[in-house]
Length: 261
Image (cartoon, rainbow, N blue to C red; front, side, top):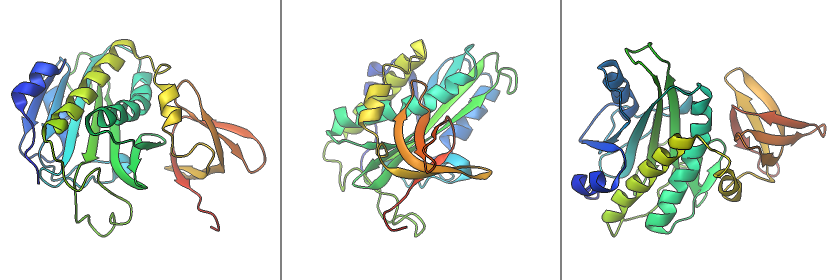
């Protein structure tokens, strides 16, 4: 375990108020409770431990105490719901930048927003949208929940071959604060413009899957299979399928096809 977070330093450097929680079920769920209670200004929640961390597609995110960053950013906006789609893509680039700046570690991005290091998943992001007036909120609320495995060990069996960590040990705990600040301020800057175009070159440069064969699916099942050729300015994935057709998908999940499978 590591000593986590200097609250004064975080709030001195962050452009958004950050609250640190010792333990919570899920920072995303706590964010929804704050929205329901009347929160109306952007805020960040950090937890030292989550007992029911949330991942995409109803999955859980393993969140033991003081081994990772468990983070939720809430942004209130009158922009269209499409903002959450852009945020889903932007979050991965901004998180990768923050990790690079603080730890000098280069992460790769698996579409849409998983971060990989040494071929293991070290970070995932779940973006949710609370539409205006659905939870006592006078504006749309975009919730960006991110988990980053800093030095997590002893993953559950179902994750042991998939999940990894950035470091065996974080030598400088202050670098953890710097990741949080870089990520929070990067999201704040993104939401001030909703401009994804400036982030897409780095997204492509950091891609784990460009030029690779993937299988794409959604909640209903198989969608297509092919080679990833590009991502467009909105973050949609472009593949050339087995028939030679160029297809665009703005949602779904991909699996890499390993040679011989």
